[in-house]
Image 1 (cartoon, rainbow, N blue to C red):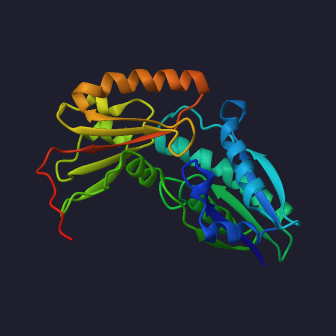
Image 2 (image 1 turned 120 degrees about the horizontal axis):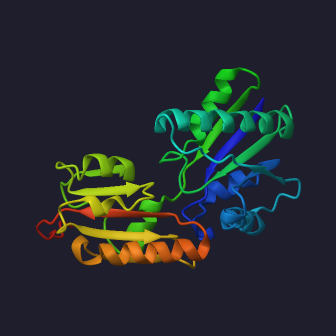
Length: 260
């Protein structure tokens, strides 16, 4: 039976690659490299850099494929994403069927970690349920943007005995800061939802292009740095044509004591 590795490649630094991920890369016959167009050519280039650096298996080849653009949400965000995933599922099915031999092995290289705000695993389940091609999967975890953000800011993700909540910019904009979470990590925020929050005494730790040479980090009291973040973000996006950023919001609280 065909096998497909789903490999987390980290948040942008080739040195985020784990030994397990490198081993999996070298077991494959074909590596699938997504192409999101000229605007995001850096993302494909990083995947090729990883392959150039770590793949030593001479029989491994690379196949690029175009990723369809997601339409503007209409009539709803959920239905738009569903249509988008259906289109990607058709592409995945064709790649698995046509590019992986009956007993061969392929791999998808997933930015960050396949289990955190990435839909590759859900899309592959759609392919499996269609029943047109049989395959096994093995998932290799990767370093997430959250880990990279905390490392760059030199902070712990959680405070002692304090809950952490991971959400999206869309949910933060609609629901505000969850009252029961001392720390909130926000992902997939294209509209700087933190500006809508009334609690300007929150501390924000923001980062873009995490782990790459273009990394930018800003932290401070939300009311003091939010305008700077918006301006820096807009400038960086205009210069590169795309941006990937995330941030951590923290309620004010007592300083932690070292319990070790």
